[in-house]
Every structure is written in structure tokens, then in C-alpha cells.
Image 1 (spheres, one colour):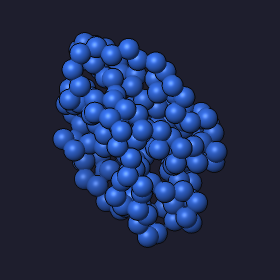
Image 2 (tube, helix red, strand yellow):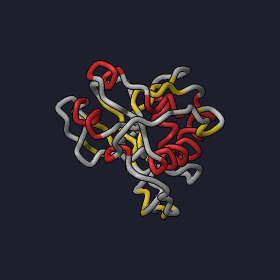
Image 3 (cartoon, one colour):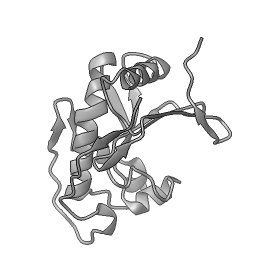
Image 4 (tube, helix red, strand yellow):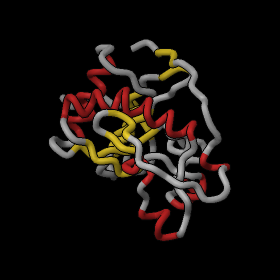
Length: 177
């Protein structure tokens, strides 16, 4: 599938650089997703870390929801978000990559509630390859129950489908025979 250029949207300050306390509401990001699903973090609570996104991250989360996540939900049913937007300190505590799209509000790890992760992943990749939805990266993991879905609001969405092996190496995903 060819890469798709996204429209640039930047309207705020990154939560990773934000200081102070902000009042957080729980806006609806899309018909089936609320902000709280993407900011809830047991890790942040355990270590007393703030995990409050700024307007830019919320805009990115909204685009992620309105794009591949709503499309996938329409195909396979409810998706439970296991990890969404992470402040830098939360990302470090989670062992996340330094340039993680989670920090930018561009990624979520989801677990399908009504089907297997592998079936949901295959449906998402098929939708991407058929041009019915767009994502930057989708990753399935041999050693984890969730799948990673990311979407860029600026630049090119790469349309990558990857499999993370138990040893941490990433390879291109191929459907099961």
C-alpha cells in the first residue's frame, strides 16, 4: 500500500514538557473512545507520575481514534486500550522507546474484546492493504497480548505491519497460511 500523507495538526504544548497541575476533563475523542482510556496508567499511579496530555497530544489521539481505531472497532467490536498517551516519565518507567509515538499521542496498544488479537490484526492489515483505513505502524507481539496501532497527523503514514518476536526483533508480518 502506498504511503499516505497526513494533514499537519499542532495546537498545543507537549505533555512531556508541561509543568504544573492541570484540570483534566474526559472528552469524547470519537464515537467509541474517551480520553481517559488513553491516559489511564497503573504505572503512573504507582510511581506518582503525571500522565496528562496537552492539546497537541489530544489532537493526535483524536486522529488515531477517528482513523484506524474506529475503523477496526467497526470490523471486530470493542477494543480495550492497555496503553495510550504516555508522558516522558511514564514512558521511561514502562521501558518505552525514546522516540515512542505513545509520547506524542500517536499510538495505542489495544486488546480486542470480541475476537482474538491475531484475527483483529489480520483484519486491520487487510483493511490497510485494501485502502479502507490508514495507519503508520501496526505491530503484533509474540510475547504480549496486545497489538500496537499508530497514526501520524503530519508526514507520511508508512503502512507498516510488523511482528515483534519473543527476542525483541521486529520482522515484517505475514498472514498465517
